[in-house]
Image (cartoon, rainbow, N blue to C red):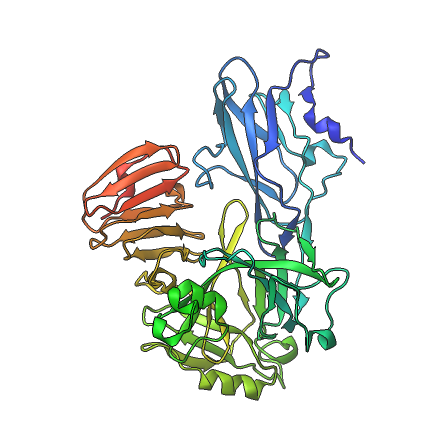
Amino acid sequence: MINKNLFGLFLLTTASVSYALPFSVVPKYALAVGVPVNNIVLAYYTVTNNTMTTRNNNYIKYLPPNVTQITTGGSYPDTCGASINLASHASCTLQLSINNAINGSDPEIKNHLFVCFPGGQTCAGTSSPLNVTQLTWSPINVAYEIVNIGGLGTSWTNPVLTYKNGGSNSITATAWNNYTPPSPYITNTTRNLQFNEQIFIASPGNPAGVTSFITTSDGYTWAGLSTAVNAMYPYDPSQYTYPSNTSPFAAGNLVTTPPPGVLKVTANYKAQEMKFYANQNDVPSGTQGAVPITRYYITDPWGNMYIMHASDYSDPADVASAFNAAVLPAGWTKSAATLSQDFILTPAFSPPNVYEYNLLRDSADNTYHQISWGASGTVVNSLISATGMPIWGGPTGGKLNITQSFNNSIFGGGGAHQYVFSSGLTGGINTLNDFNAGLGDTLNFSGQTYQYSDTSSGILITLSGNAQVLLSGIHAFSSSWVVG
C-alpha cells in the first residue's frame, strides 16, 4: 500500500533540500467514492498558494487514470484553469471529472493528483486521494417506503424525507403488508416499479457512492432515498379538509392520492439512475420472440413529457387500467408506446451533491418522472400557486420561464439555460442557485431595465418591475449575460 503521507510531501526531483509545501490541496466537499457505469461524477479540491509571492503558470502535472480536469465552464467562478495563476495565499477550485474506478492506494505516483510550479520539479499532492468504485446496474421491481413527516409542523414547504427498505434488518414483504411504522413515519403506498434496473448513486446530500441508513424504533433498517417538496396542482382548497385546505403544500404532504383533475407535483431530490427495458427480460430488440413492454406517458400543455415509473399494481393489465382511469388536469394528454431500445433516465444535477427529478402523481396513484422539457420553457413546478416549490430545468439545458411574483428557488440542473423573467413580475426574489455563464447560461428580462449590486450572497439584480434576481455565489457581473 502506498504511504498516504507521501501525497502531502513536496517533490523536488533535482535537489536534496526540502521546503514548506508550495500548495495545499484539500477537498472542497466530501469526495465521491462511487461513479455510475457509463457516467461521470465530479470532485472538487481547493488549491491554495502557500508561498509569500504570486505564482503564475502552475499546472496539474499528474491525475489518476479515469480523471480529467475541467478548466472552463466549471461549477464555480474560481475554477482552476489549465494554467493556474495565484497570488500569495490565494486559492482556486480544482474541478475533476471521474468516469471510472480509481485505486486510491495505487503505488504509482503518476496515478495520483499533483499540482506543480512551472517546470514540474516543485509539486504538492493531497492527503485525501480519490478512491472510487464503479456503481453498476441492479434489478429492482418493488420498493417499500416510509416517509418522515416530523419536520413539517406548520411549515408545509419543508422537505420530507423518504426511506426505502434496506440495510441489515430490512422489512420483508410479509411484514410490510400490515405494517404501521412508529411516529413520525408514515408508509408510502407500495410502489410497483415500472423501470427494471437501477443504479442508486447516494442518499440525499451525500457524495456519490455513500448511502446513509436509519433504524426505526421497531428495529427495522432503512436506506435514505430522497427528500421531497410536495404540492397539489391545480389547487382548489374546497376539495380538501383542514389542514389540507390551507395551502397546496399542506395538501401535497397530507393527501396521498390527488382528486380527479389534480396532480401531486414533487421536487424529488433522489440520486438514482433508472433503466426501462424495451422488451421483457431485457431481450434485445429485433430478437425473434422479443416481447415489447408498453410504456405510459403523459404530456402537459407546455410540451413537457413524463414517463410512468411506478404504479399501485404489478399486473400489466391492472397498470393499463389504472393509467386509463386517471383523470388529468385540462389540457394534459396520455399516450402509450413501446421502446426501440432500453431507456436510461438520469437526474438533473447541481453541485456539489444535489440530484433531482420532477415527479407527478395522478388520481389513480400512478407516478411519473419528467423526461423532456418543452421549448416553451414553462414547467409545472413554476405554476404552484404559492411560494416554496423549487423550479428545476433538465440535465441538457433549455429555457425556464418565471412568471409568479413571489420568492422562487431555481436550478438549471445541467446544460445551458436561458432564464426568462416575465415583464409582468412585480416582486419576489428569484434565486438562481447554479447560474453558470461559462456553460452558456443567459438572462432574459423581457425588455425590463435593471440595476445590480454585489451582496454577500451574490449579485442581486433589481428589475424595473420590482422583481429581483439573485445570482447565488457569483460576485462579478457582465451585461453580455443579458439577452433580452
